Length: 263
Ligand code: ADP
Ligand code: MG
Ligand code: ZN
Image 1 (tube, rainbow, N blue to C red):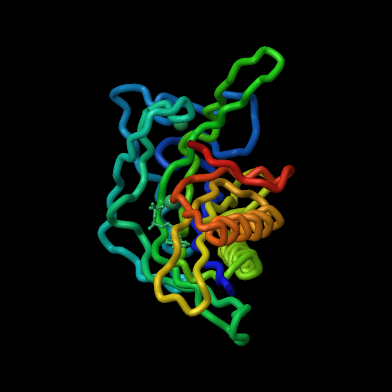
Image 2 (cartoon, helix red, strand yellow):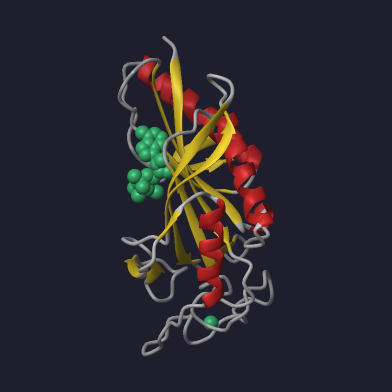
């Protein structure tokens, strides 16, 4: 049986603003832990976020470069979740009215030759979370809130990407456009460009997509490529063995070349 791979990517990019999205703290990478924080980005009660104008400008600039429609009336929403990297216990994001919609990026068509459009479903503005650092020596987990409130764009593609090569080309294209627009340095090794990769497989010629899995926060081209190839293989094996793919989030370990279920 022949199978085709279907991928959709959610790419997060940290914006190259001097200050954070809702306060005046610096966005500079590094620094002593917990020195780039204030009462707003650390979530003290009674503080009010005020949106950074540059973030909105950068989002619009990105949307125009990616052929999107720009939403005139914007609003932010609270995405509640409880985790130590998030001092407010909610992330401010755009759940219902994303600033950009219906765009596209052109890449080479690896199946039919020529060019094809990868459609962009939406781009929204949101804030980054802090970082947990596990210390094996003392067997404890420390938290660094310097990254809390660093502005992010999340660029969500439609499932138009047919496998690892196209996914890598798509992210390379995005990176070039974001850098050209001056909205992000896109340093993958510093996490300022990272991708959540959704993968499914289906029989060639099938009309309906298969069940997808998602691998979060992949931060190199090589890892994006390896993760998609390995996940494609794993899903095909399951189907050939008469089993079902379970919709879930999996953790990709690039050094071992395997993904594991996170539940
Ligand atoms: P959620 O909000 O739960 O993450 P979405 O519907 O927004 O779900 O989809 C997230 C990503 O998954 C999008 O990039 C989309 O293109 C991709 N996707 C959706 N269905 C599939 C599928 N069957 N196979 C591969 N990718 C998919
Ligand atoms: Mg998702
Ligand atoms: Zn702050």
